[in-house]
Length: 241
Image 1 (cartoon, one colour):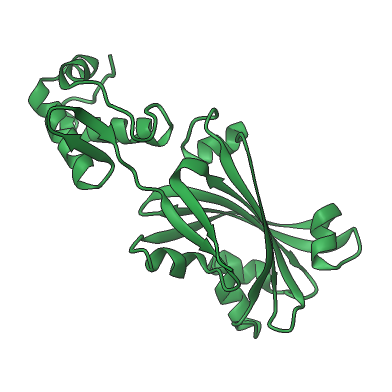
Image 2 (tube, rainbow, N blue to C red):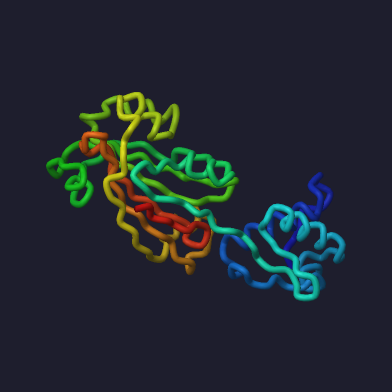
C-alpha cells in the first residue's frame, strides 16, 4: 500500500494524482496501457473510490489519462512532435506546438575537446572547450538531457552568459550568429544510464533517443557540437528535408 501524508494540508486525491503521474513518467504503465480499476487503486492508496476518481479525472483533464466508458482508463500522453531542421530551436519548436518550454543548467565546465567532438568542431584534439549540460522540459515534463560543446577561443565569455541564461540561441545571437544553422544530425537509440533515467524521470528499461548534431554559422564555420539524450516515449523526431 502507498502511504499518503494525511493531515498535512495536501488533499489525498492531489497526492494520488502526483504518485500516478510519476508512475506513468517512469514507465510503470505502458503508453496507451490500461490502469488498474478504481477498486484496486483505492486499496493501493487506502482511500475510497471517490478519492481515486478525483485523481484520475484530474489527470484526464491534463491529457495524461484517457477515460473510455465501459472499457477503463488508459495512459494517453501524446509524444512531443519535435522537428529537426536547418534552423532547429528548442523554445520556438515547443511554442509552435503550444507546449511550455523550460531549461535549467546542470553544469558548466572547461574540458579538453577530444575524438568526435574535436573533429566535428574542426579543432586539434586537446583544444580547450566549454561543456554546458542542461535539462529541458515540456509542460514541466522532462524531455531532454543536453550537452553542448563550444570552442573556448570562439566564445570566451560563454560560461558567464550561459550561467545567466541557458539559451544557446541567445549566446549565438550576442556573438553575431543569430542565423546559425544545423549542419547535420545523427540519430540513434540505447538504454539510459542510471543518472539519465533519474534526471528524465523514466525507467531504465525504457530506451532513450540519442542525437548528435553540429551547429554552424551562416557561412559554415563550426559553432557547437551537441549531444542530446531524449526521453524516447515522450518525443517523436521529424527530420525536415
